[in-house]
Image (cartoon, rainbow, N blue to C red; front, side, top):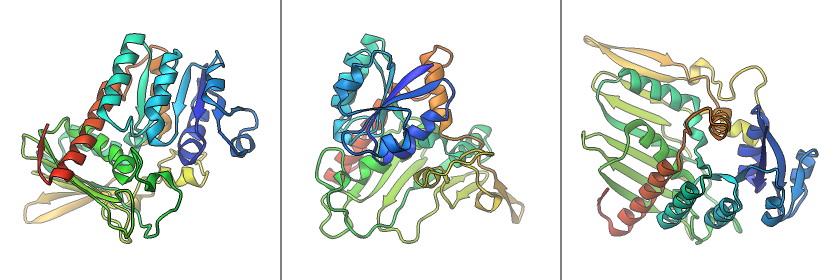
Amino acid sequence: MIEVGLVGFGLAGRAFHAPVIRAVPGLHLAAILERSGTQAAEKYPDVRIVRTLDELLSMSEIRLIVLATPNETHYSFARQCLEAGRDVVVDKPFTTTLEEAVWLVQFARAANRLLTVYQNRRYDGDFQAIRQLVVAGKLGRIVRFETSYDRFRPQLKPGAWRETACPGSGILFDIAPHLIDHALVLFGLPEAVTADVRTERENAAADDAFDITLHYLSGMRAVLRSSILAAAPRPRFVLFGTQASFVKQSFDPQEMNLRRGFIPADKPWGYQPEEDWGVLTVPRGDSFEQRRIPSATCDYRDYYSNLRDAILGRAALAVTPEYALEVVRVLELARESSQKRSTIPW
């Protein structure tokens, strides 16, 4: 049994970590760091509640620490936990600068500690279905990949750290790590990055929209987009290939289910009815054949199951720290590209 300490009980800790950790055999949620309030104690009366990171690190039985805290704390907290001899999961984004990420990776390697980033949306059922289509070559040579992650929240949220002008705030660091992860998993590292990172809401202090294009040697383009003013969301995924196209309109339901505290008891957490599946369109002579592609039977438990097995030496780590570095590198290149209004080579 791997004893786990969770740092932070805001939305990320409450919805996307605690219930998933509790649902994976071999992991035991032993402690939650909630600096104030009683939500964690009320939700998990059998879990020890601590108020400081030092108190959590004093628990010698804790082997794995999960950081679900504001982005600007990721580096300092991860460093403290690694230096205390613990394995560490950092919620995305890994860090707010590439320099910080490089230091953590080098230290973890030297200390022989496991370090990884919570790329949970790699285990969205629709994305895994796309991976299967790409690997099987069903689309032919892919020339365009689009992924959009939109919201509609026209009003600013006073006091929300994500909407202040602090390091790691804004939608680029909140949403883009998911989309970058998908592109890198499917197509590897690009040769250049072009980005427009901007604010669209009046008086916004942090970026709330972006368009990022990853350029590949094959001529393929991966277009990653997000806006907080999308009352009519765009398709979640679009892929164009020389043999077929694939379009997925709706979102994997796991995020909303976990936000509501709903976990399906008799089916995968990302289960979607057939009408919500993506559509593969294949040319057949002068016409087109369309068929729905079911989402894969996976969910966010698979991330923590892999992590458990990696800690126990039974599997290779799916999200390596070296890979996490490349996601941060894309974030920095995107920010540079937007500031310079130019394409930045890898």
